[in-house]
Image (cartoon, rainbow, N blue to C red; front, side, top):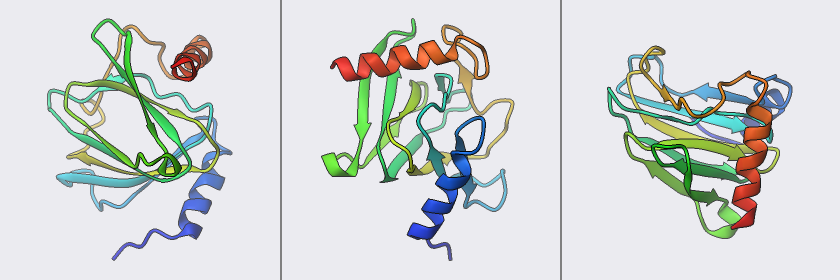
Length: 157
């Protein structure tokens, strides 16, 4: 049995804030080959997740917000944002299921943000994500400006 407590969420967030990537997950699945991957994922402001989609193999991805707030940015094939979905339990939005083949990224809005993430498995690093060719790669110098641009676009709506 796995229990998610306030202590678990706080501990994960405290570790995530110290990491260069500003995020950290805690897997609940025992093996990467599990047909359903489940994890806690702590996202701190400033973390950058290159827009990506899950296809070939097709995978659904679910985010259920447990603490804090974040935005799931949805993009068209050319990289234009088509939607910004706020997940914030205080605003009444608790979860999103992203279908296979949908370009998306995450923008963390506040420190201590943690989601319960569910994704079809198995996890295979070489085929898990198709990264958007129109967005900076994680770690590339321009990612900070790109992240700021997306955040400004969200706040403008």
